[in-house]
Image 1 (cartoon, rainbow, N blue to C red):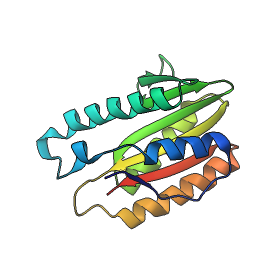
Image 2: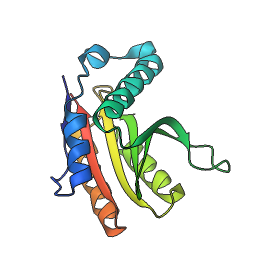
Image 3: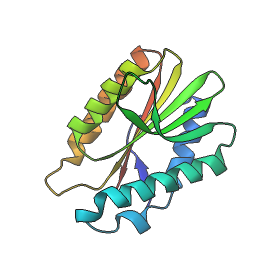
Image 4: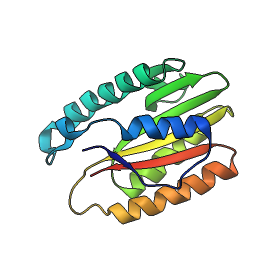
Length: 158
């Protein structure tokens, strides 16, 4: 089981590289069944797994877990990458459209104007959560990111 890229295909080299490496990450050890009460621990372990995979695949980027952009803002980015003249933001969430949109808006608001590559990496949620609505919001985030001069990709782990 691997993340499936669910947003528009890009021709931007850094984003293509991120997409390629994220789609290669094996997820079945983390999301083979409903997470239930183990959700927080499982997602934390998966976060470390993704960060480690990216550190090996893209060592030119400095990768940080739970990065706080500012001391004045209490929110932290799940996985943050600092590259030469750009940043990478990876947020891990259940596949809920409201969660994807809320995180995208808040993170884009607190980040500096540096070129940003924003990734929504959504893991299985409950059966009531609508994957197609989540994918629709991926496209909205992609449009908004592009208008701001940034880049976006959305993934769903099935």
